[in-house]
Length: 134
Image (tube, rainbow, N blue to C red; front, side, top):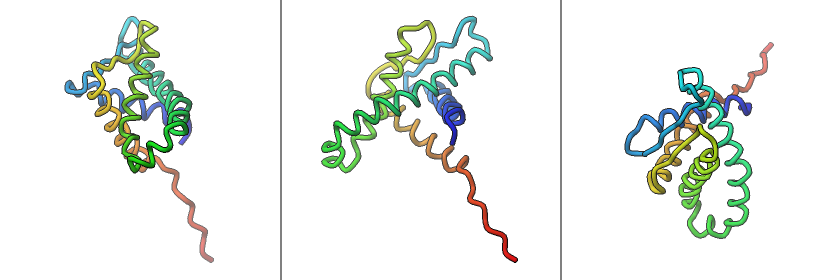
């Protein structure tokens, strides 16, 4: 999948997560805050989360490799929540962005974000072309 499609999927997943009150996730769109600004904000948040996941997530995975081995990869569930909190922290410097209420709802939101991305990854996966039979 291309970066733009991944950003759109991440933005959609963040929008779905913001609809669940238990997760305490709010999205503040660009001003004046109409529908178009909300969509642009979601795509920008999806792109930013993708960049944070690619850069910071990779560094954490390299440094914490022994921890991944000890926990048999279960620490990656916490890592997704931490990356979501890092994205919220970065957007906290602007007048738009993401706000995560607390750590554990952020971890749960990170797990749900991974599940939504996994489902869309299966749906949007490019199909292999079958060779023609003669």
